[in-house]
Length: 430
Image 1: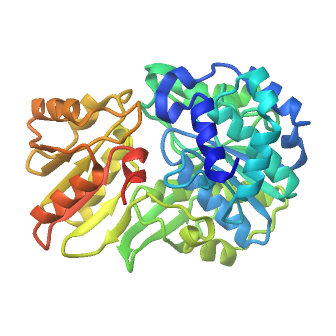
Image 2 (image 1 turned 45 degrees about the vertical axis):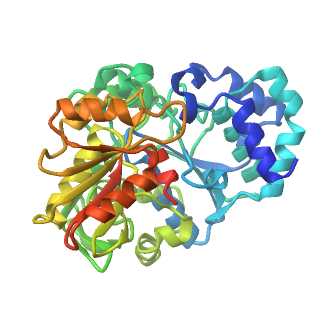
């Protein structure tokens, strides 16, 4: 098989959560352990940082990878889902996994797949671990796929565990209360491994403190240590002044990930860098500042408040897809474009709590309802019906590009077109 045939084989042969949802989710680590045993446990041959959270874990993963890479460490990065290309999931120093490695790995493990029957995600975890081991990375940043305690990535023994925040998402799998969701995320905290918690709520903080105590870990609360005292957008950068409450030192940083919600992620990253420095990693303030201005260049990250057209009209893409993520997107729209008329191109997957998310959107905006072409997608007709019941009016389109074209044809020069609701909507933009 060539590379294209190999990727199609993976999609067709293995159950894939992003396409079919909960049916692809394995509620234990048995398959991953068996797969990695068959691969001679490559995850034991390089150092890792483990990152979980409802929102922000992808951004934090990319920022930390950029910083370590800029500091001179050969840095692996495993994230999911991909937007355009499978190789986005597995990178070293920003470069996607070699296509020939993917082909060879899949060919070599067909018998293992037939024996173990792993999911698509379990298979890509094993592939990433073997690639990082073979390429002898100094350290790899590993993002959980879903949850933490039972996530396939949770067989590593990391240098550092990071949990960004807790919100309502994947309740059909992780539980329908914040406490239950926090319990799953807290499962990446390991014995005697430093742990950073980015944001917490009164009902989730005790869950993390109890897990940290159980594992003999001192939990660092990033939002208690670091405080953003000033934030604004300028020249397509997010400018943040950050106060360290322990030292009373203040630093100015610029992020090319310029969504306002990145200020919370920045505090998490700064706490993680402090923890890494205590373990002996050489990361100067200058290196960190340079990396944060160039995350997209260094790691190839996309889909977070991407302003793809700055005027006539402004067009923005964001993979925000749950209640907390959409709240942040709407807040930034109001701050950055307070007088503009908004055009929302929306598409969701069917296993999200879309009803509550739709309550957040302004009734005076224009709407273009669409869907991705995956089994999990919520059909645009269903979305339009739900939206109409919330007094959100618009038309439906079976293709996101048709929806965008309609929005562009309708929008005035000073309007804003916002495309969001799903990774898979962004992935299908031409």
